Image (cartoon, rainbow, N blue to C red):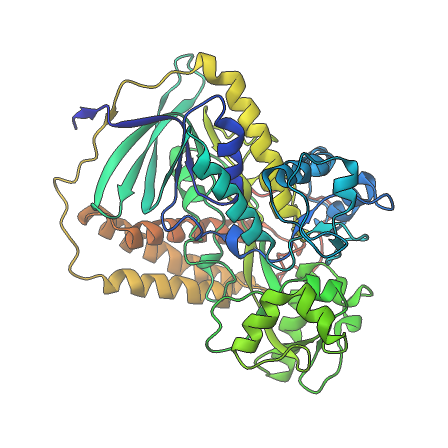
Length: 541
């Protein structure tokens, strides 16, 4: 291979959601930042997030209460110091977002001010409640919080002279080399596929951050956009990073069940505002599973729905908020109201058909509170990472909070290291001299479909050792096929995603087989009881 100086930047951020854009904006005043998106900038989970951001802003609430609610939802696996760190910085995160101009809903119904926020401004924000929370502490922008956050941060990033936003760029692999002090490896850049030119180029960077989201596309039914193929987790693993708790895949209890409604989530805030879950005959059922009823944590609600659907042989259950005033519904949930109406469902008068769907990856690349990984100058933030916040079950609206707080910490970490970190002079050019264009793309689509189906059937809401072992045998065969295909053909976005999805699916299965208990989001028929000692499942390359 020949060496190339190529494109370079101070900080290369892979992913353009809340975590990536926050790190970019927090770093751009002291560094040149390049943000890569493999699709359009908005094609990440942030844009589609409906619920909100959990933060302690009300006098009746407390940091201690938010911490305890999170620990309870996480079923013994949350790292308390991490939870306390995240929650104690929640008001700071919301204040920063208000200052950026995010139009949060206020108690008067209008958007929050974009002026420099003070205590009065923050106390004026409207708070809603979601499952697992003992208080109203969810800051939101009606029912399209992610869209409001994304569009605001993108607008700020587009205006900043030190931020470069690149669309249609798929990261292939991280480039690492031995650290000069002999302490492990250091990340020096990334190989990136330009989807327009179909060429792979090396981008040198002093720091690299993985903000690629989760891996819920491993499942047949998911609320996530198409790009959620676990890219960052797979790249970090191949580079030598540990991953943890990949068995904890959160299934959102309420995804719209309609043949034409692809991946449309019905926010938990509906249940926070009094919506009931009902069987086809109108009977409420959650009280049989948990005394918190519809406001139980997501793992409990998802398992309850799954149980009732299998018991009755029905295709879905129903979410009913029609007992609330029509104006209240339309004002609080305009996005859901319009979307359901598009499919012929008037939620002010009719029930919403819902099913569980894969929603959030609680495990990921192991990091500390500042997003630092096992490899020097490599960071992982947001859903790509495992910080210890979510434990065995993520509590609603803690995910966006984590994005902001860890991105803040990562920016400070990079600021402290920048004087001692230089660009490498060159990275070896990508070698495709012995590969050809594929003439059989059906192999990619077939393996993709097979993975997603057996992951849903065998590694889903309810598991067993037999199902997991069957899934393990299948994923090992598919990974061999994928490796053979990858070696022989020029890379494309589709085969890169398949390569990552197959690897991450294997990590999920390995973690699930190692956990000999049922805890939180991992429920297995062979070990239905919870172990006395709570331990993380840590895999090392």
